[in-house]
Image (cartoon, rainbow, N blue to C red; front, top):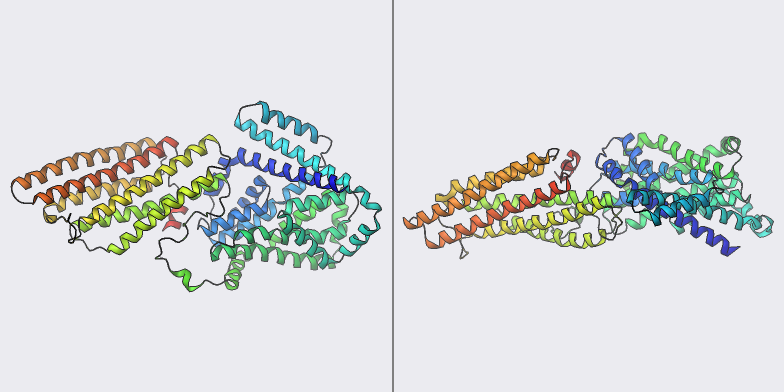
Length: 549
């Protein structure tokens, strides 16, 4: 009996995992679009949270992603509240699927799915096959668990245990503890449904276990936030407080109303009774707490206030702004995080280029600040390499693979732009052997080149790439113009040398400056080419730009 129970549980969990993987593969691009259109609108946030959780079949996974989002500043704490509420609704989908009681057709679903995965080469078809096979295996596992537990109906020890669990507080603790142990409310609800189908536990006892399961599922996000920043930890507090408040409200409601009798009257199917109770609990709790979402976020801030040492923003080796190295999440999440981190890094490189060129013709500058930015750029580039190693292990389609590779190349180009900024800066240092002394003579030329680079950066940062050909051609023309001007300015400096207006050293240094500016333009062009090749905007979301600002 124990072996059959464990075998059924193994099939149930593997089927759920397989279905989740297939759903994510089939809906990866759509999920990415949903995430990128996320706003602070509460209703939209709840819908997004429910949809994502319905796709990946795990509220724990969604809240872990949200912890990562908040930790990497992809999402505010207020937005996280709505997503968590939606995730609690979305997780009820698995219970409703189990309640369908499709054990008779489960083998057929599994066979069809395996054939689609094994013998067909189309990736979309493979993903659909994974969904069907996972669903079939899930139902087979459910049936195996139910059959294995039927003999327990005759066990006096087990019947005594069930009687004990009818104590509401103990039942909540059992539900919370077991769910925390297996780290999946969907799986623990499925096991509870298997018990109910075997006639071992009535809804009057299982309802409190359901309340506890919602609390126990918070353990996964709590573990994910251990090494995260304070805002990410607050996300876990919001998740926990949401489910605790819901449990208290429903305990009171259940004790003073015939709620259990009403749920039993809806359907005779014990699994459906549990699934419906789970769904109603989360929908009603969400509706009740939706107006108080900001209050929940404020409560989390009060419970976990920010520390003074976390206000220091001058460090260059603090965690990446938009990437959580501990929680990759899914491929769409990784791509969205990479894009935002690339934008933040490009802003740093652009600031250094502008200030370094201005320093050449006497504009005041802060060398220490420029060097901190450069160290930050180098640190990000190093961390991105580690992150890409982990991302490459995720299952991704061809388009996502091309996009990830393109973004990785963009980071390399951004890092080189930063290097050229430091090269240019050294020419303004009077203590350097390569100090440019004839700055007034070349000021207008340097200003013109700086303006052209600013136009290229502006096009790259502002363009939505709805018309990638137009953006490509415009930046390409700027790049050609910079090449023409740097050639002409080198020649003009040689003429000044002949007329003894500049020294030989100034002539050499100026030629090096022209080379650095040319290289910066080339790297901008490389980034644009990667964007065009992938047909995606590197930075195409106004909300993202506001977060960067």
